Image (cartoon, rainbow, N blue to C red):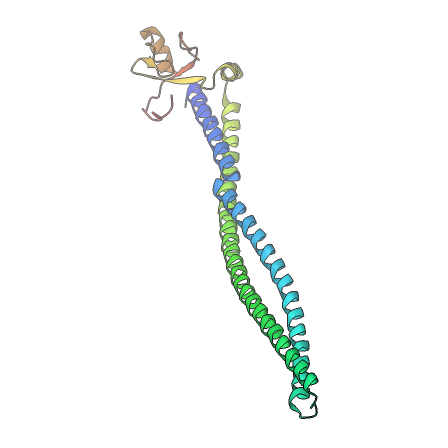
Length: 244
């Protein structure tokens, strides 16, 4: 393997490193995860509101039931006085009848309030159950996504480390002068090396003189494109056509 070919492999590996970092960044800021988190927070907000409302309504219905119990007891006492036969005074009987009517109306109104409140409680209980169920599904989905992302990120980290080690090994095998030229070019151009194909530099598509082509194909020294300045590499096997 020629020194120039090692430079080419280093260039490819460094490009792969950048792609791995992009993939990792995408996974770390996964939009699907963000959407799930937002949906979970919305459900948590709903759950909190339903629970709070149910607590308030529970206090209300306890008070109403207590009040109903008192009114029922009061109505029972009036009925006892009214129908026991002990009260014979017309005025008192009339007053008891009026009281009975008034309390019955209050009792009916109170019972209706309780029924309405029970319907509201049932509705909110069902909504709470539905929200908790959806939150659990979202939470499971989030955990699955997160676990899947972790596996992918761990794999990327391993691939990244392997590539870094390969690059380090390849660089140690290069002539320091060749490596220095490559690094200097890389500071100016993100693609410091280009393939020679069809007697042209694939970086700038300019034709290369035959005398230069011969040097490039021998692969013994660094040869730069006179037009764009990139290091020229000739692939003896015709591989890696996806990279310039």
